[in-house]
View 1 (cartoon, rainbow, N blue to C red):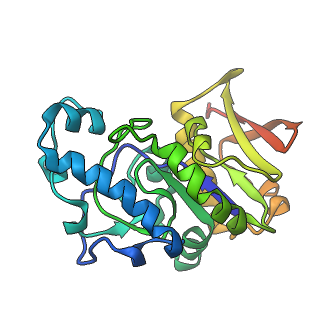
View 2 (tube, rainbow, N blue to C red):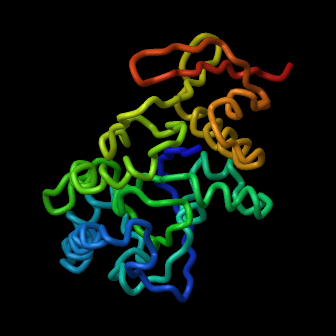
Length: 246
């Protein structure tokens, strides 16, 4: 079973001796397109234009560790590079090797800069505000144009769980049946806590090495109860109620 996942704004500042290159990524035949995005990003960094750099980062202050060419930085596995709420809940480092292998093989993360990457792809430390154009280029549209066919092929014959936040559908629109999860509490849809539960769901899937929809629906998810299932077109939305401990 394949899982589509969002990146996180928070990232781990950690390096290795692996410099950014074509072998860091899945879909190597499409690396030239990633390289275009990387070159645009580097051109902003190397411009020295503080306002443009801050706009690209989406911050008020510059992190000095970000002010160098991406090609000079050591890379880290994507699933370890991201450090947001969902990734904290996933606890990848604590999983056994079989669960880690399941994630590395079956999870695709939609990076704002590098586009669709597998969990096992290697990424340098970087920062790019969600939806920010880089030198006038909307990278979500850029990657949708150049990578959609490759993603179609990667998903072919597989059941799909889409755990992405809504924005990341701009990178790739599903063309086959898929499942999504909606998390509610006291009748209201949650957003921030949804990130946490997406991470917990992914952890449970990895531990059980989920192969298909039947396996997914058979999972026992702690603090989550099935509320309803809504089918609309290609999408099957599973609504889960957050059960609070008394």
